[in-house]
Each structure stands twice: as structure tokens, then as C-alpha cells.
Length: 225
Image (cartoon, rainbow, N blue to C red; front, top):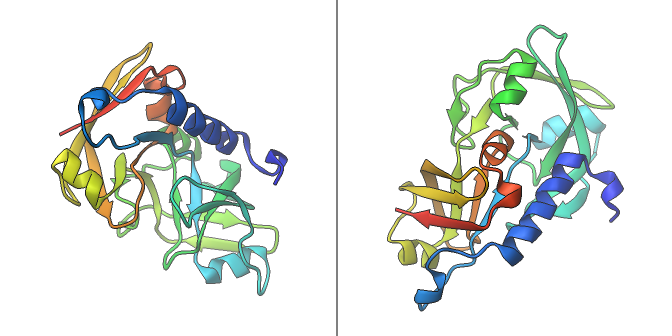
């Protein structure tokens, strides 16, 4: 599939994943018998949709079209994009990527910079925790959906399997720290652990956090309790 179908933010995230997976060493890995393959990815603004909302936005019977597989198995960036419109209907983000597969509830994940552009005051939430959050309007080529809630800044988190969790001495729901060594080295605290039986070891931060840490020029990343 040609990258011409992807927006610039998605392409940049994919390139960043490749660079980090190949060239950013994990601190202390050489001294451990089990060295998890840590990936740090920037999760650009995106939308998750229900089956119902996919049909409203893109037409009856429409299914999301996978354009690029994401690092986590079974997840993908779709060819489809939507316009996200703020509460005053004058501010919008014109082409926000839809991620698949579909979900039980539609959700929009933005960085704080994005939310300011839309005139929204969004909370930091774990994905799926959308009760009491602001809404927005989604515009597709075939229809419009008004979300009463569901716009969040996804809190920084790390996906891992149970073997990784045992290695780090953590469990699902715990908190960790991420150190990024770069031209603007930082330590990010309160990284939510999302552990299950199948996930690959991957940290998700948003574009604001990635830019602040100059992740593009990172020389080392490290997970810490």
C-alpha cells in the first residue's frame, strides 16, 4: 500500500517506530538475561469508531479499509479519515485518521495542542474512560455524527505482555517512569501499565510529549519502576 494514502503524522510515527526499534538501545539491557524489545511510539491524533458510526460517516455497509498495520498485532491505521469539529463549529481538524478495528464506543484522542486549536478543554484519561468528557462533531463523506462525549488526551501508557511485566516487577494498572535521552532528555512519570497475555512492549506518548522530549533524536530509552 502506498504511503500516499497516509497523512503526514501517521507516516512520521511509522518512521519513528522503525528508527527506534533499530537504533535506540535500552539502558542496562546488556546486563540482563531477558532483554525486552522496548518500542517508544508517538500516537498522533486519531479517532476510534463504532460500526454504526462507520456506516453513518462513510455509507451503509461500509467497513474500515486497513492501510497500515500498527505495531500491536490486530490494530491498523485505516484509509478513512474524518473531520473533527469543535464546539463553536468554526474550528476544525480536517483529516484525522481512523484507527481500526471498530470499538463499542467512539472516541477521539488528541494532544493538548490539538484541543486548544478546537476550543476544547479535554481531560487526561485512560483509553475507553470517556464518561463526563467533552464531545465534538465528526464529519465524513456520507454523514455527520455528533458525539456527546469521548474526546480525551490519552494518558501516557506502556503495553506489555506478562513476561515483560514479570521482568520489570510490575502488574496491570501499575505506574512506571520512562527516561528518554536526547537533546532534550526527560523523565516521564505516571506511565500506566497495560499488561496482558499478547501485547508487545510499546510505550505510547502523544505528539506534544514526543516533541518536548525530541524523540526523533533519542539515543536511549529506559523503563523504570
